[in-house]
Image (cartoon, rainbow, N blue to C red; front, side, top):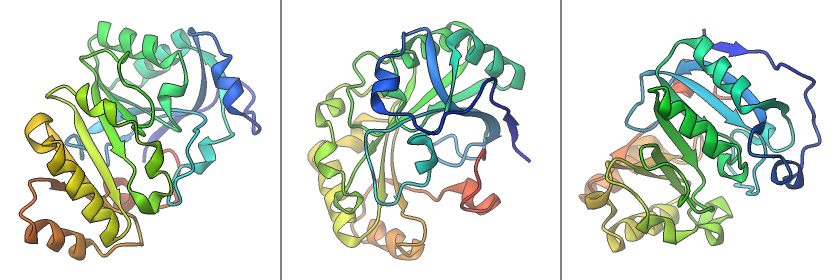
Amino acid sequence: MPDLIAPTGAVRHDLRLRDVRELPADRLWMNEIFYSIQGESTRAGRPCTFVRLSVCHLRCVWCDSAYTFHEGYELSVDEALAQVESLGCRLVELTGGEPLLQAGAIPLMSALLERGYEVLLETSGSLSIADVPRAVVKIVDLKPPASGMVKKNHLPNLDLLAPHDEVKAVIGSRVDYEWARDLVRAHRLTDRVAAVLFSPVWGAVEWRELAEWILTDRLDVRFQLQLHKLLWEPTARGV
């Protein structure tokens, strides 16, 4: 089973955006740190340490980590580093919530890189990635119409992507698929990043149906499922 590190302090259940914005860059609001199998991206199937930060400014209708919106505990960047090191895995992903809401996410990623970790960042794509260290593999999640957050996409991020970065779209309908397909083509994303990932919303889109849409359009994207939801209960935390 995944290895979950218990909170080092009392957990708050009333966090707000102002709490993360007021926090100095050497501290973090953390939701959980755990060791599990990477369920998504081109690293799917690999053991990975996940650093899940608290709070998100978006409200995607299919969010599967809404518990991060208001729940978390405070710790220092150094404490987070020590906990990551205690789990003994060289692949680390920052996720959330939305990690880039917290100023401390940048020094944490920089420190992990300095220590030789392979670092992934999963971000909603609604905040600029300009300050993220280039060596970090940025997995930018495009928000299609059915998410309810399509207007929050910060499309200038597409011009900041490095060749090793990845783009993800979670597809909840045929309209979502066509929106994502057209955006990928318009920005030539499959030629510019390591992978473009299309995932069906769990329980909303038939897996085979999405695969057939991709094949029919001869779209050079990677179909993916959330592997961790196949291994454990779809609603399980810390996996």
